[in-house]
Structure formats: structure tokens, C-alpha cells
Length: 190
Length: 185
Image (cartoon, rainbow over all chains, first blue to last red):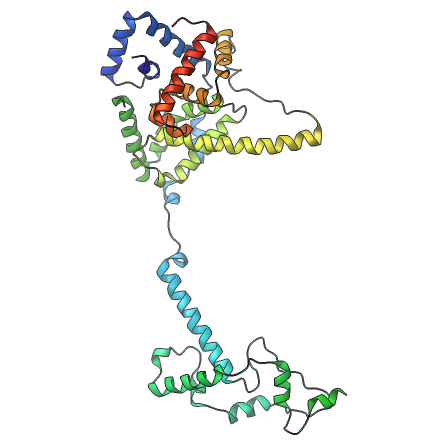
């Protein structure tokens, strides 16, 4: 019964229990004294009223608490975006490499021509590209792989196979490739 | 558990559902049901200033994550748990700031006791002094039981202990308080 005294004092008992405690306390001095102590403790810890209006004013509106997953964070979208990026990157790489008789890749500058050595005409890029034209060169960005014909795909794969063994653009090598055969670019430095 | 406490849970659960349905008055009712109890818990836990702000922060945090609240526990218990975390966070921040102030200015920060201004009579001071003599865990369990009429299972959740241990802590605390105050009960 003593265990129920704090709940009785706090008004947290249902009617039946409250009546039972009341009846007991009326005839039990020890429980009546303990109930008195419980009430003294409660009074000792009273606080000033809380400004509930101020609290409510700071609460979020229900609409803002719904957890809405942004479109760009939805799993399916993220997978699709990743695939698109990968395919796009592969396409850019393929096209760039296919034109890399002279580097035209974004961010890769043509190697400087050593002064005093052979000169290269400004339109070298165009001429070299024309000379090495391949069927797959027609494949441009924005064309989906699924839209290619079997012949185009085969051509693309062949081109990729050849590129696998190729060394990445190296300024030193590229400068040599620009120099007409029989001319040593190192001579110009001496 | 007593049916009275179950009734409280059902009432809170209904209010939460109403608020989720867009009824802002339900939020007001929830705050009115629990704000004072939270303020009392904060003050009795030794929070000396900006108790209201702490209670506000508790409600804001609770309403922002109300979807994570599980109705199998009492809303008040959940609110107390949030408040307790906020109190601990504030204490850590105050300790850091206090150290800095002492180092920089060489004097202690004057504290304001929210309880002193309200209950300054001798009886209250004696009672609080007796309660202060309890261990921190005993004090927390005792005050949650006496001030809020919380079930031992809910107290256990708030203080991070077991129901049985809380029961023992309460009875030991009650005996200690009686001895301190010279009560025969």
C-alpha cells in the first residue's frame, strides 16, 4: 500500500485504487505520516508556472515534420544517376581517346613544341583526325549505346581493344609525335 | 501498472494522433499536460537558470522526432529522457565554459536557483537539504516517484536502471529522508 502513496498524492491512481488508498490511510497512522511526507517533498519542489504559449509558438508545424526524402536521395534515382555518369564518362573517354592522335581532351593541353625544332602547322589536329578517321568516330556524345547497330558496337569494341594497350597522353611523347620523322627534338635543347 | 497511468498514455497517444492529423491545439494540450512536470524535474536536477528554455528545447526536439516515439512507453517518460539528455549536454557545456571563465576572469559565476524564489520556507529548505543528502541516483528515483507519481518501470527508463533496482532505491531513499527529518513514519 505504501508503494501507492506517491501515485495517490500525484493524482495518478484510477478511481478504484484511489478509494482503496484513502480508506487505508484513514486507519493507518504510519501510511498517513508517509503520505504527509510525500506531500511535503512535493511542495518543496514546486516551480513557477511554465509559459506554455511560448513553448507552443516554437513548435514545428506538422507539415514540416514529415520526413520527405529528397528526389536526389531516393535509391533508384541514385543508381540511375550513377549509371548515367559512368556511361557518360566512358563515352567521353572513348571519344577523347579516339581523337588523341593529338590530344584534344579537356584539360590536356597539346605538348609544347620545342623552339628550334620542326614546326607544326596550326591545323595539324584536323589533318591528323581526318587521316585516322574510324567508323566509330561518328559516334558522338548523347547517343545511347542501345541505339548503336551491331557493326557500330563491334567497331567501338575493336577501337577500345586497341586503346587498352595505349599509353596515356604524355607531354614528352606527344611532342615527339608532333615532330616529323627523322628530326630529333632533343637537338633543339642543346 | 495502475489503470490511471494507462489512461494517461491513451490520452497522450490520442493527442499525438490528432496533432499528426494537423490539429495544432493538440500540441498545446500536450505541452500543458507535461510542461510543469518537466520544469520540476529540471529544477530538482540542479538546473539553476533558464529552466523554461530547457523545457522548450525538450518539446521542440520531441515534436521534431515525434514519428520515432513508440506508444508502448509513456510520452512523459520519453520527454523526461530527452530532457535528461539536454541537462547532461548543458552541464558539459557549462563545465567547459565555467573552466574558461575561471581561467579568464578568476571568479565564479553566480547561480540563480529557480526553486529558492518560490519555496523559501524553512520546511522546504529542510526537505530539500535531506533530499540533497541522497546519492544522485537515489535522489532522481525518489523525486520522480514522489513528485511525478511515475511507475517504477518508467523511472527505470529515465534513469537507465532496472525496475527492481529503482524500487530498492526508492525505499532506501524514503528511509534516509525520514531519518534526516526525524519522521517516525
